Image 1 (cartoon, rainbow, N blue to C red):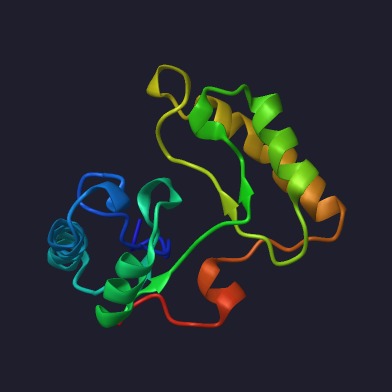
Image 2: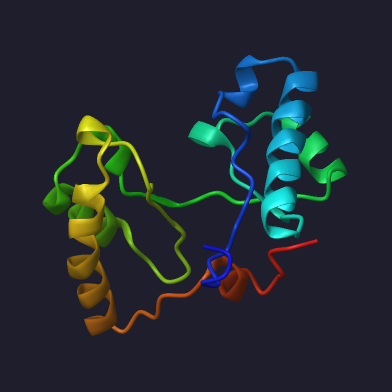
Length: 148
């Protein structure tokens, strides 16, 4: 993924709800994930997307201390909820606006398959392009480097 120029970010070591664990464990989750990413691709990430979008002030303060930019979304495709490709596409297209960050997943959904997410993409991409949208990476949208 890194060699193909995908943006790599931290999403925790094993996907807990960070607001439900002690702050020391939150820091461990972030650092452990970061160390493994660094071991594999040789860079340190700048972006943190908390599992489930679960945050509180204490986690935000710690993320800032660790020099992270927290990435959130404003359009949830709900692809994680076992929806069909048509429903996923509808959720995105109905809620899209210029500058939106769309949440989609690379796993999960019905039977832990991403098939419906993948099947929704051509419809979403073609429709958005037809409507004049340009699809960009987080780094292009926010104009910041993804790595420390």
